[in-house]
Length: 117
Image 1 (tube, rainbow, N blue to C red):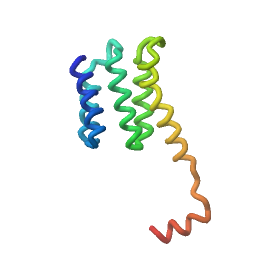
Image 2: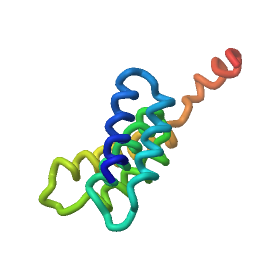
Image 3: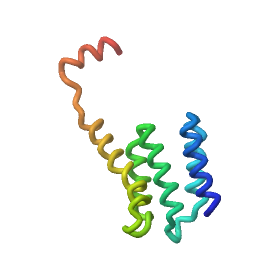
Image 4: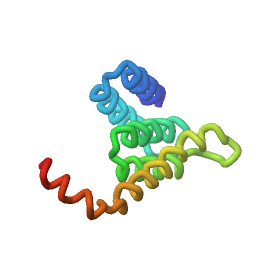
C-alpha cells in the first residue's frame, strides 16, 4: 500500500512539472498497486488524484466515475479533508460534461463555423 501512495505523490509532482503523460501513467500504476479490498484512504486518494487529472484533461465522464469510486472508499464521514479531496472533482467534472453536452450552437454561428471548416 505504501508503494501505491508514493506513486500517487510522484504522479502529482510529475503533473506539476508539466509531464502529464508520465503523471497519468504513474497514477494508473498507483491505483493498480493499491488493493481495492479492504477500502483504504490510500486507494481513495489515488483514485481522487486520477479523477482530478482526468477532469483537467477534459475527460469528464471518466473523471466523474473515478471520483465516485474514490468517494465510495474515502472512509468515515469524520475525515472531512479526505472526503472533500475525493468528492470535489466528481461534481465539477459532471457539471462540465453537462455544460458542454447541452450547449447548443446558435443558429447565426453555424454559417461562420461551416466557412471556417
